[in-house]
Image (cartoon, rainbow, N blue to C red; front, side, top):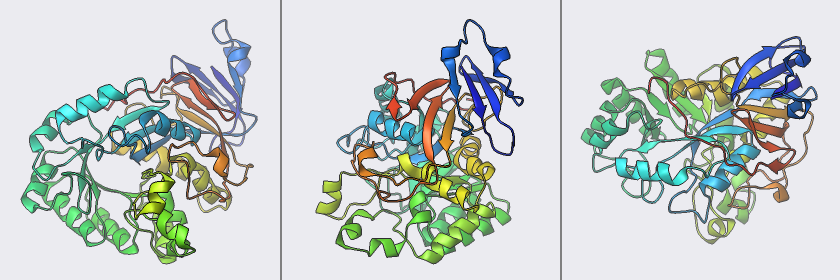
Length: 412
C-alpha cells in the first residue's frame, strides 16, 4: 500500500508513506510514490490523502467495552467499530466487566472470547481485588497492560480499601493504574512512592489533583496523568442545562468547574498531563434516563474534539500525537506502535482539518446509541483509519474483516 500526497506534522511538503507487510517501510519526503510501484503495489492499492494530514493511529489507554457480561451496552465488536470511526487503532480495555478480570483464569477466558471480534488492535488491563489477588498479578504480569486498582467506588470485588492489601498489589505490579479522586490521589501517590511502583492516574479532573501530580513528578517519581475529553470540554454548567443533561452527563469522576477545565489544558501544555484516555463507558440512553447511572460513550469523537484545539492553536499536531498516541505506547510498553515512523506498525489515521461540521445523532456508531457531543462542532473529520496497513474505516464505510489483534509488549 502507498499513501500519497500526505501532510504530516512539522513538514511543509506532502510526503508518500510506503507500507509493506503491515509496517511503514519508507516515508518519502519528496512524495515520489511512483518509484515504489510494483506488481504487488499497483495503482489500485494507492490511497490519495489529497493533502490532508496523516497521523499515527490513536491509542486509547482507557475504555470499558462491557464485554463480557454487559454486552447490551457495548461489546468488543461495536466498541472497536466506534474506535475505528474515531481514528483509534489500539484500545486498552478495563477489567470491571462481569465477571471482573481479577484472576488469571478470567483474563485468559476474556482474551479467548475476543479473538476475531475487533476492528482494531487491543489490550487488557488486569484488576486488583480486595481479596488480595497478588499471586494472580505475578502470574499475568506480561499478559496485561497494567494492574487497575479502584480507590473509589467500583463494581464487584474491585474496590480495595485495606492499606496492607493495597501495598501488596502495588509491590507485585509492573505499573498500577488507579481510579482515585480528590484526596485518594494523594493516597495512591504515597503508596506508589513507598513501593517504588510506576503509577498512572486515570481521568484527572480537579486542579488540586494536577497540583499533586506535579509535586510527585518534581520529586522524581515515575508517575503519569491522564485527562478525558469530557473533563476537558464539559463542566458543571453543561450538567445543569436541563433535566436531561442532569441524567446523561454523569460519570465518575463527575464534571467539574470551568477553572478545572483550564487547569487541565494548562497541564497538557506544560507536560504534566501525559495522555488522553476516553474512559469510554457506554450505557443505553434509556438506562441513563431511568436512574442515575455513571459513564458516557466517548471513543468515536475524542480525536475530532481534540482537533478543535489544534485549529484554535492551543496545541499543535506534534503535541496532539504525543498525548494521544506516543505516550500511551511508551507508558504501557506497547511494541512497535505510537509513532508515524519507518519500521513501526502502519497504524494511521487520515483527518480533514477543514471539515468543522457538527456531530449528528445519525452518525453514532456505539451500541449505546447516543453521544454527549451531538451538536458539537468537530475540529476535523476522520476520513480513514488504517490498522497495520489494513483499511478498517474509509469514507464512512467499514471493512468486513475484523483484523484486530492483541497488542504485543516490549520485552514480553
